[in-house]
Length: 264
Image 1 (cartoon, rainbow, N blue to C red):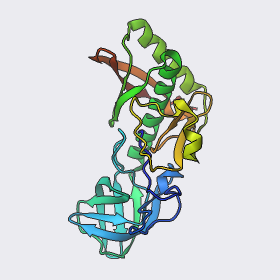
Image 2: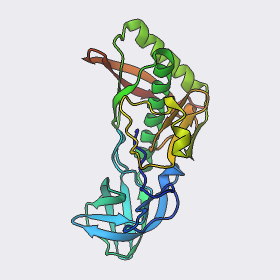
Image 3: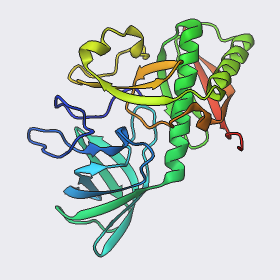
């Protein structure tokens, strides 16, 4: 959720891949369009049961967000993508069947239901994070998204029933306000002038990352982020706090579930 996945070059990996030696790596198409479902790419590496592509829509597991899944097709073959991971600047796709060969052209399709659930969940966590930061100035110490729920840890010493109710109400008010959700790239020197941009207790954005991708829930939240999101908070539907835990003297965990969007 918090580490911006891109290469070490001086431009965002939203432009063309690949180079490797000098280097850019895999072009991650989801950084510019979370709603795209299909893409074309080329195999630049084959290792065990995995293939590396010059460009991809598949989100690699990391930052608390689950990896995408889906399928890859090529002339004479097709396989399901069962795992996705970044190795340095290159995205590898683990397949459950035959593999295409190096330099072969492929087309990919993500599992949209799974992706959209992650988009809604990720934006819900940003709403929660924005609300808690505004109310209590608390930072994030960890998070994880699952198929049916998500959790986030905060530097909070007190999480009374009254606070839980206040957080849930304010979060749902933010969601139903219909705030636009936008992403953009900003120079690191500019980002460093916005102290609230890094919400984690420890800055997880490597020093070489420049520019930095930021995700803004207009009117509510702004932070460095490399994941997928919906375009408007109304798409989240709502959230319910289902569980809280004491994880230390000044560390509290909040677990949420999503509520379905209202029918139009």
